[in-house]
Image 1 (cartoon, rainbow, N blue to C red):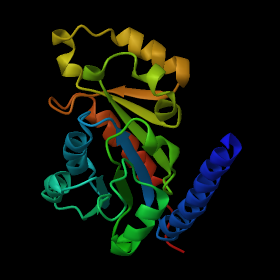
Image 2: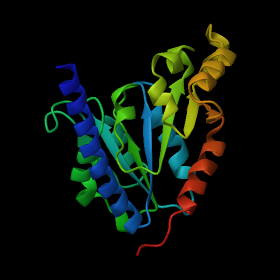
Image 3: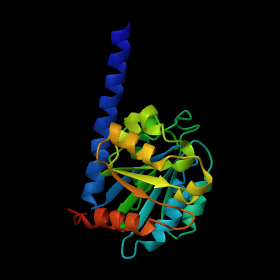
Image 4: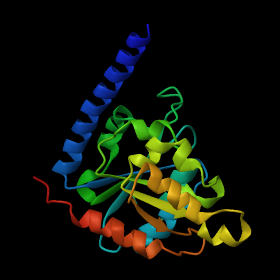
Amino acid sequence: MHRTKVRVVEDALDANNTIARANRDDFDHHGVKVVNFMSAPGAGKTTLLERVLPQLEGIRVGVLEGDVQGSMDADRLAGLHVPVTQINTDPGFGGECHLDANMVRSAVPSLPLEEIDLLVIENVGNLVCPAEFRVGEDARVMVCSVTEGEDKPLKYPLMFRTCELVLINKIDLLPHLEFDLGKLLYNLDAVHPGVQRMMVSARTGEGIGEWRNWLSTLAARAEAPA
């Protein structure tokens, strides 16, 4: 019985990876670089996007917004005059707590791939499931807020281990918290040694320039459409 359950999980992930490669082929064909943007609920993903997207001069950006229900985050980002496509996982996908490759595949026809250079997929807020499912991205960025505690890398290691960049957000609150930043960084290195990290504040704008440069460098690697 245990083996059967393991086999089912492996088959599901294999099927997801096959669809993710198809997504990646479509993105590559149009010369679009893709970021899978992940975090726990309330870590500040949408606010960080509101901060950085207007600074990406010369880069055509689109957003694929994932939520269980509603379009509040998508509505906020649409105010930046960038193309935003909404995916709700409930009821269409049963209220899933993550985006998988098939969900993204269903949205590809609605994405203006020929008009963008960089696609940011804002995943559903969750520290577990999104890390397990590739969606066709070039890079994964994870947001960790200082209000979440120093132990999150140890409790949710896969999320931190599968990212190319960790944004440590809400650092403006450090003077008001009993939070050991050094301990968080130690725990981060314990699960993903040397992973790139940036200290940012969506409220004050601290560190946003560094993240803007990271996104600009990623987008600049996009090749012309075949």
